[in-house]
Image 1 (spheres, rainbow, N blue to C red):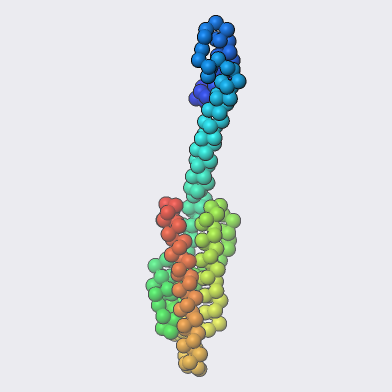
Image 2: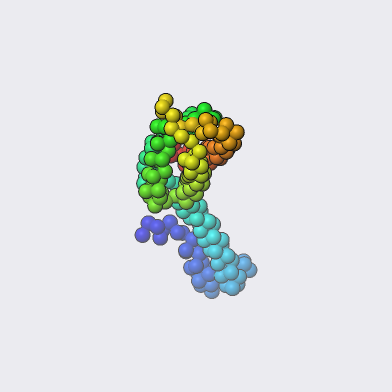
Length: 200
């Protein structure tokens, strides 16, 4: 009942009937005396108010859709813990591949990729899904290439094949640096989006 009372403009429909009835007893200005003009005027006001209200409701719905769901927040936080953001930035993104990568950091990335595949349908936010998908694609390109062009080192590092062909190892290192740079660029875009949505 309250919502019907709040829609006061619905009463505009009754205005032409009321004015037509009043013209029988009182002399009204031309605008109100002609019931056709009165109906057109009232319906125009009524439609204008409805259009404004529709626009406001659409904006409200858009805001509700853009707000992240609790499941989205939980899934993202779980993935970021798996990735170990600090280690990813320091050991992969800001590190030259020529020096090698820490094995435990690379293992963490592989764990993250596995967890990301498992939680693919958990995140409902379209924008986050797209940003996460772009980052995961670049990260997969990096790990796929790296997997074929590094070998284990006793100190716990994965290093390019420097002992066999240093020139090729240098080319491979540059390619890994390029791929990790692209992954980091998409990662920064993802983090910016998550900050805008208030998740991180």
